[in-house]
Image (cartoon, rainbow over all chains, first blue to last red; front, side, top):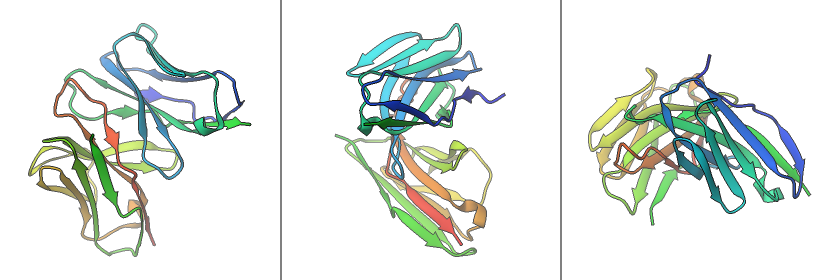
Length: 112
Length: 114
């Protein structure tokens, strides 16, 4: 079992829809959780960073962490065509070193 | 603000040729530096990381090596490229604090070995 699982999609939604992106993980030691957005042929861009459980909101983006279920989510409200990209989740454990454990990414297409 | 520069953006190299990819970071001191490789459908794989000048840790045995000759410079090299070295190579940095693990990426180098 891979440590981080993420549905690759593709996920296609109409403009204005609420998008839900998810990752599950198996390592209960993970405490730091990140979401990255990656446009085609570009480097990943950090969107959200959360520590431990709970919610964090930044504009149209909300990140949720449920450590009891080993499940994290990224919600995008009022989705825009410019949100079309691949979304990568990443996580790491306290004092585990420097490697981030990435999901393979979910491809999102927001259609006008 | 901090910026990361990575070049070249694309590279086509023949099998057996050498490789040198360079990455520099501005606006921060003593960053942790990373080289990742992203293969299609396989996610990001950490290749090397460095916590200081001359300090390199390898995560995966392979045909590649890394060096950090200056505080904010990280170089990925190979003496002889293999077809399997093709991929999207990403340099990244993070703050020098083990409590902060989020990484910031460069724009990547797409390497095609022919």
